Amino acid sequence: MSRLTHSSGGFARSLQMSSARFFAFVEGGLDRPFFDRLIAGVCGPRAIKHQVIAVREIPGSAGGKIALLSLFRQFRSSGRLLSTAFGKTMVCAFFADKDTDDFSRTQLRSAHLFYTKTYDLEAHLFSCGDLQRALADSCGLTLQQAKAIIPSQNGWLVDVATKWKDWTILCLISQTKRVNCGCTYDRASAVNINPLGPTDVAALESFKSKLSTLLGLSRHDFDSLFLKVERRLTVALNSGQPLRYFKGKWLLHVLQRQLETSNRPADSVVNSAGDKVTTALLSQVANHAGCTCCAPFAPGLSGLIAHVLQ
Image 1 (cartoon, one colour):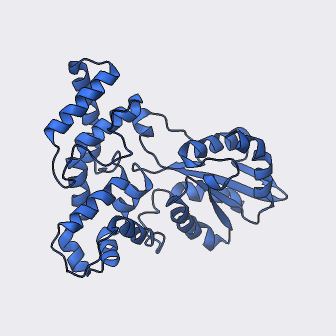
Image 2 (tube, helix red, strand yellow):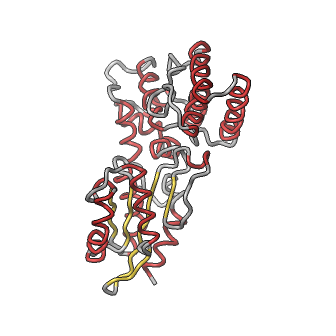
Image 3 (cartoon, one colour):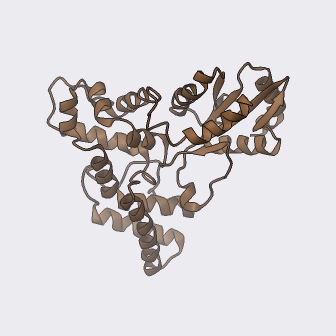
């Protein structure tokens, strides 16, 4: 991040010279079009020009969440989150995947920083978009055929998160304790040999043994830790938040297997279905005033945009 630090003054001046007044900084990838659609729906009717910038676009930045939050801290300490230059009021907002930050209590707090309520943005789209419609549009199905594969969107999400609960617990422990024995959020479940099936007990036992050794815990103490994390996951599941700690990108893997094993039309297109469904879900964002994908961000955004209108 050293080059970013040295060039931050020049970058800030480029924002001041821009005709945009609302700047959104995101991690990149899916975040860029999602927040462009979301913010356009808020800024457009008010004739406020906005700009969405992925942190990787900034000179010297390696990209990703660490770089995004580092830039946020720089802007906060230098008073650039809300500023006036050349007679123009500028607002800067930052949007980050929550990941496990709420679990480890490491979330930063600011009206200018927005976290997803789910683990990541993919999980947010799967939880708030119309999954059945997206599935039909992506795979060449009728809506009725899509509903036959996934009869209940919420029921499907809860079922997957429940079946993968043991893997999620292992990943949470590994992530928060900063150890790695192969059970990480970077890979699909290694204890759900069949992505649609229950935990493989032998595989789970193997990972438990490896993790307890790496952590230097007796098996009794590790089991207590496992149970403690399991209780928090169960609370999330029972409170209607199945994807709070479940990585949304895992759903692409599960959905692919679901389609491959389902009773579907022979000419349906299921190759790379997860990616295509995600794109279809993205296309639903900000299409109408009651967009459920926009709702969690709307109050905070309205508060920031009020500064521009003053």
